[in-house]
Amino acid sequence: MQVEPNGSLLVREDIAFTFFGPFTGAYRDIPLRKGERIDSVLVSENGRRYRPGGNAKLESYDTPGTFGVEATGSRVRVVWHYSALSERKTFTISYRFRGLAVAYDDVVDVNLKVWGGHWPVPLTDLRAELKLPKPVSLANARYRVWGAPQWVNGVTDRTQEGTQLRAVNIPAKQFVELRTVFPRRLLTSTGGARVEQGNGFAKIIAEQTASAAAYKHDHDKIQDAKDHVLRTLGYLALLALAPALAIIFAIWLVYGRERSTGYDREYEQAPPTETPPALVPPLLRQGKYPGSLEFTATLFDLIRRGYYASKGVTTEKKTWAGLRSEQVADLELSLGDTAIELAEFEGPVTKVFDHVLEGGPERLSKMRDRIDDTRASNSKRFTSFKEDVSDAIAARRWYVGVGARAFGAIILAFLAAAAILLWLGISGFRAEAPRWSDIVLIALGACAIVNAIVLVVGAANAKLWRRRSRDGQLEAQRWEAFRRYLTDFPRLAEAPPATLELWERYLVYGIAFGIAERVLQGAQLHMPEELHDASTIYWISPHGDLGSGATALAIGDLSAGFGSALAPPSSSGSGGSGGGFSGGGGGGGGGGGGGAW
Image 1 (cartoon, one colour):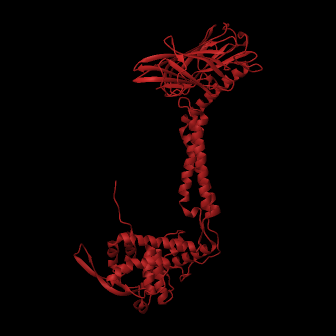
Image 2 (cartoon, one colour):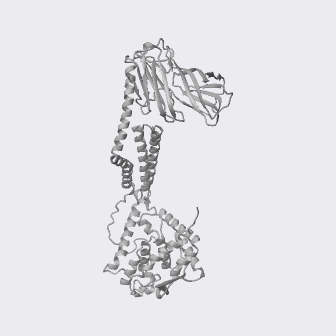
């Protein structure tokens, strides 16, 4: 490079390409900033000049030995055509660069990217030389040279005639700058330079000093984070979890925490409302869907109401691998008064058992296998049962769930923040010399993602953002008191009310709550024998051995059996007198990149 007396810059680039296979074209892109111009473009190979007028489009074909130039406001593109087959060729591109040198009152600043950051391939060896308009004494304090960025493996030097730079093993897409400052008096005019009023030397020194300080700051901060890894991980964990946990707690306080109703009774000795047994357990757990216990309780409620007729029988049960058998209590079901009014969610239950009873009465102990025989259709009916119960719960408006919107909005905000932070951090990330700011942005973006994940997990627990309405909460508290009563009354001295309807409802709701055994224990202790004999759903003697009959401890097994039989079938499939590089650079003109095809 030669600085002309008017401040323009004559540039000559010798670029060596090593080709593997056939190639016919190459290009060089040179960026332009405001006020910069390039002209007098020439291309040559081993002293042989190429002819202008060639095609300037990328990946175009034209006569070897020609070149074309395409200029826009932001760049100049030089495209040349040749013929190469697995060989090494050196091309020379020369041009005049106007407006790159900045002429201050005291000095001239020539800051040029001698290797652009757009080259897609690494460079083994880079040499650059800048010749001054006139020789200058090395003792002149305003004659300085720098290379940039600091992490590039390179050195600079200066002589009375000019400055030099050499760098090796430059990674792909890594720019290299050569910055030279010399006294303004070396120019005879400023026709080819950009003129800035005032002195510039102090400002340039400040820029270089700040750039070097920034690089050192980044290096020291990163090293400190690595030297204190436990502290760093602690900060990251705090940033990744604390905001989300605080938000979850706040949402629970505002939207999920149950409100007081003033209810304070310990027991309810009878079902507090006429709510069907399939709906009560979901209300107590603040859910929307029932399970096999609610399904079984619905069956027994249908028996209690007479939709199915029942008769106590005994069934032979084999034990000890078939070596021993015993007679156990069982219940035989048949169709009863099918004209009674049913809730919508009871329809799928009747379809399951109506199909079982098509051939006549059937014992309860054998129904699991009969249901399992038509699992595909019955699993769909079980799904319909759950969906219909969910609809019935929604119709009662037991829950207030506006907190879900807050969760959704905050999760989206964290994801948007993560996308922006990661994009900012990754787009500017330098693998060779990471900036602390980029690392912080990436870390904050990752923490935002973790926060979003924690919030998603929190949102999966509806109790954090949904609470019961006042009426729903009051009903839930009353049903909870009734459940405590059913759990505790076998050990209570006071006998339960002696009405058959109430005893049968005790068992139905006990099945739904999963405490049928406690109800049966209470029945054995307190239920009059004459009521037991008249019942349609108690089929074990109140004085019998609790462990000997199918009903004593088998209701839970029966419910679990229904659940497995109703499950879907399984499926299968597949500066100074020279020295090293300093600062981060990036302020120089020129640069760009190129390639070949």
